[in-house]
Amino acid sequence: MGIYLNPGNESYKAILKGIYVDKTDIIDVINQTIGTSDKLTCISKPRRFGKSYTAKMLCAYYDKTCLDSKELFDDKKISCCCTYAEHLGKYNVIYLDITSFLSDTDKTSEVVKKIKAAILNELVKEFNTVSENDSLVEALLKARIEDDTKFFFIIDEWDVLFREQKDKSKLLEEYVSFLRDLFKNGNFTDRAIAGAFMTGILPIKKYGHQSAISDFREYTMIQPSIFSQYVGFVEADIDVLAKNYSCDREKLKNWYDGYSFPGVGAIYNPNSVCQAIRTGVYDTYWSKTETYTALLDYINMDTDGLQADLIQMIGGNEMPVDTSTFQNDMTSINGRNDVLSLLIHLGYLAYDNQSERVRIPNEEIRREFISTVRSGTHDVTTKIIKNSDQLIADTIDMNEEAVARAIQNAHDAGCFGVSPLFYNDEQALRSVVKFAYISSANNYLKIEELPSGHGYCDVAYIPVSGKHLPVLLIELKVNSSSEGALAQIKEKNYPKIFENVDNDIILCGISYDPKTKAHSCRIEKIKL
Image (tube, rainbow, N blue to C red):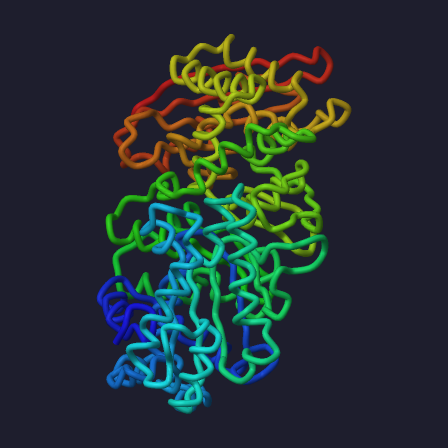
């Protein structure tokens, strides 16, 4: 058992001891490509979406030195597939975590040389015909002939150099050449390699309209295709977790769902789901990742109205995007569409392939956006968030004039996607209110049409766990009075659903008069 050559199955055994969802049927999809022209697979998806779990699982399955791996997989989904026995433990595995090479060297310019040397050193120890004077390709070919066994390459975080060393063009060119030598080599690839699985965050770098390694079959957050159900947890996976662990399915969906693909449906962030189940805390787990800094950098660019679009999305709207120009790197960013495309791959936006529109997928990401905007440098965006913070404070303080004025200002700003010409119904008024309360995501869960008492409250803001804040129940009226809106909350007993809640309840009636173009507000506080 080596570090890079046939690393064994200990990492996968450790995974099985934690919160585990069986996604081993992905192996069958990969097995069907082995030995074919589709044998090179590259899957890109966001950090914390299970890339390394998959890589370690594949090591355990393909590694010919893992004599006990059958015991690990016999009770898993893959065991029911016709390709299971054909490929179990049949290959020499080369496993590379590119991040480990980057963090384990003082000279980043030497990373590619270090990768080659690490593989070669283990080949020399394992195979009699391999010499330390051989090139890596020569050594692999000799080993394949000596052992009569092909190699299966598993490369985790393959794109880390493009993300963290994006300005070092010479290093990146050397790295691409290394990959081409292995996987686009007519004298070597088909003879020595049974298959390859690369995973990272970014798709393979484009040069013009061509991929740097064109023989790989790519699957991305924009087009995951046959790997859609393996991007994250699907509803069936959440069923399994709900059966085996204590969890709140509604909270899981609100916090970590929101990605979806045709034929598969809802996709949840797997790491965040497991963290929430393990700790019982439904919160954001993204700010500790490296992509958080990237998010701030690109939002601050504010190209082609990007800031306004992000504010729209924080408010719950979808925005159009053209993903075709994105060059799959973090340096060739030439406008709004490239930034939004990058944020799709980073997992901060969900993409609808049919409508070609993007949205913020869930509460976890919405909070990250708000936190990022707060710390940003764009004056207009920062002002919108601060105004929203003040509005929430004024609502809690029952400052009716200030609330009415804030809603009026939000309406006049025209940033909520509703033309003033069509601002004549409660749906339009609701759009304005949701925009005005945009920063509530930090402390509140927003629910529209909340069923309670004898009807449905237009908008309810419910404090998240651990926040000692009042519940905000908002009823909206057009061509009627704010007093009437407040009266409806009482008459239909909307607060009833909170009768076992210890928080104060703020009742807020907001109205709009199309004739005078004025908003009014009435607020009361109750405690059940």
